[in-house]
Length: 165
Image (cartoon, rainbow, N blue to C red; front, side):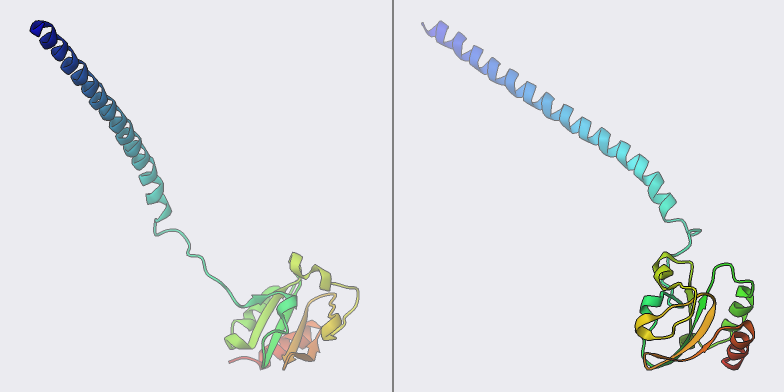
C-alpha cells in the first residue's frame, strides 16, 4: 500500500510540475509577443516621430491683421479696415502701403472669404446694423462706428499714405 501511495504522490507532483511548466511557457510566449509588438511599434513610430519634429516645418502662428466683417466693430478705439476684393488690381499697391502703417492701426478683410459673403451687395451701406459693400473700400472705425470711408483707388491710396508710421 505504501508503494501505491508513493506512486500516486509522485504522479501528483509530476502533474503539478507539468502544469507549472505549461504556465511558465504560456507566460514566456505572451511576454515575447508583447515585446515583439513593442519593438515593431517603436521602430515605425520612431520614423514618424523624427519626421514630425524636423526643423524645416513652418511653425503655426495666429495672425491678427486679417479679420472678418462680423468682428470688424468689436475693437474699441480708432483704426482702419481695408475690405479688399480677392482679384483687385491694386491689391499689391495697397499691401505695400499697409506694410508701412502702425500695426494696431489697420486691419484687412478678404471679401472673398465665405464668412464675408453675406455682406456683399450691389451698393454700399455703412450702417453698422446693415453693413454692405460691393467692392474694395477703406473704412475708418472710431468707437465702434464708421466715421469715414474711401471707395476709390485714389482715395484709398491717399489715406494709406497719410497713415504711414
